[in-house]
Length: 404
Image 1 (cartoon, rainbow, N blue to C red):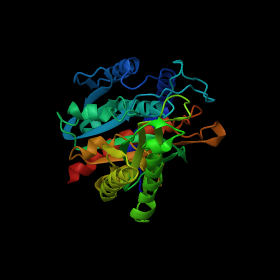
Image 2 (image 1 turned 135 degrees about the horizontal axis):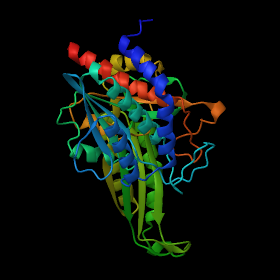
Image 3 (image 1 turned 180 degrees about the horizontal axis):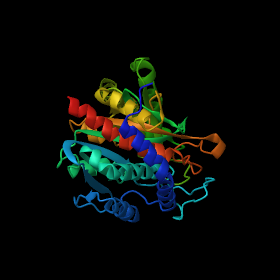
Image 4 (image 1 turned 180 degrees about the vertical axis):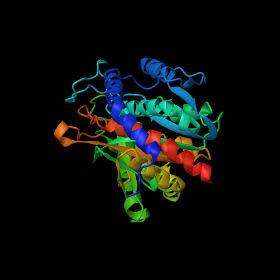
C-alpha cells in the first residue's frame, strides 16, 4: 500500500475534525428541500457558506444554483466540482430523525448528500488554499430531476472564464455500502431518450367496430413490436431498455367509444451511440409500418435527452487515488440504466469528466431504500467521505494535469 501523502493526511484530519459541521449542514439541507428551479432558500444557504470561507460567488445571472470560484496560492489547472441541489415531490416516510419540513417535498434522491459533501469539500479546499496550485469551480446545479439544470449551466458557459480542465461529480448509491465509492472506467450511467408516439385512427361506436379505424389495436401491436428491438435487433453483448410507460386513449371510464387517437410516452436507455441510433430507426419503422397495416397514421417523436455518463479513462487513476486518499474503498460497480445530466458537461465540451457513486447503504441504520422512495435514507458517515473525495479529486487532478 502506497504511503499516504501529506495532502491526504491533512484532508483526512480535516474530515475527522469537522465532520460534525458537515453533518449539521446535511441535516439542515435534508429538512429544507425545494423543487427544481425553486431552490431559492437552498441557493441562499450555499452562497452564505461559500462566502464565509472566502470563495468568490460568480455572478452569471442565476435565480437558483450557485457557481463559486476558489483561487489557489499559485497558478495552475482549473478543476470543477459539481453537485445537484433539487428535491422531489415525495412525502417523506423514512426513519430519519430530522425529516423534511416542507410537506410533500423530499430529498428522496439524496441530493442533500451531494450538496453537503461538496460544501464539505469546499470548506476543506478553502482551508488548504495555500497548498492549491490552480483554482476550483464549485457548481451547485439546480433542476437535475428535470434534466434541465446542466443545460442551463452550460448555456451560462459555466466551464469558461476560467477554462475548466477537468470536472468531477458524485451521486449517492444505496446499492453499495458506506465507506465505499464506485470508481468506474468507461460508461457508468445510460443515455436517456424520450419517445412520444401518436397513432391516429377513426373513432366511433365500440360495438360497431367495422365502421371505425381502431388506433388502440395498432398501439397494442406497436407496444409488442417495440420490445423485439432489444431482443432481436440489439446484440446480446449490448445493453438497452425500451419502456413505454404511459398510454392515453379515450376519455374517463367510457367503455364503448373507440377514440380517434392514442398517445404513448416512453423512455429508451443505451450505452453506445450505434445502439441508440439503431433503436431510433427501428422504432420509427415499427410505428409507421404497423400503423399503416392497421389503417392508421402513426408518428414517433424521438428526443435525444441526455448522453451517456461516461468516465474519461485519463482520469481513472486520478479518481482511484482520490478515493483512497480520502480513506474510502474504491469499488468497480455494475453500470446503471438510470441517467444523469452530468453528461451535459462532458458531451457538450472538450472537458474530461469523472462521476463517482458514493456508498450510502447501511441496513442496520435502515439505509437500504432505492432512489425516489419515500423511505430513502442516506447513512451519515458518507458525508465526510464525499467531502474528502471531492477535495482529493482536486489535488490529484491538479498534480496529474501539471505533469502533462
